[in-house]
Length: 116
Image 1 (cartoon, rainbow, N blue to C red):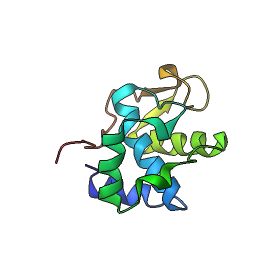
Image 2: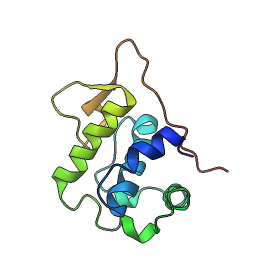
Image 3: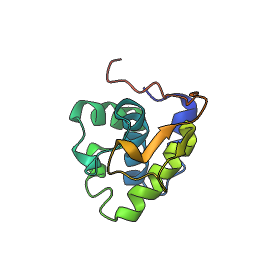
Image 4: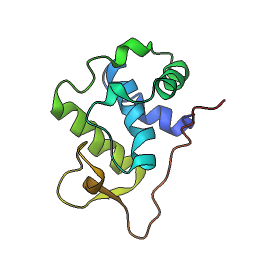
């Protein structure tokens, strides 16, 4: 689950779709080292758990990131929140080389989980 601080962070985004999309990015980046281009296509169980926690319908995620700039802006914010730094320019949702844990390696990891 998201910590209270994580939830406060993602609720700063503009609408429900963006709140849920940022939460997915927040939980995906530390585990995979990148965020897939198709954020709404991540594991349904994980999205359902975040949806429940945030009180936002899963369907709100549909269309998230249709504007690539929105997704990349959110990824940059999420990476900064986690304490990650830029490696090759702005973090992007295209692959694992786009963001790297800060040095020394002390990035925080949200306690995102699909288990209760």
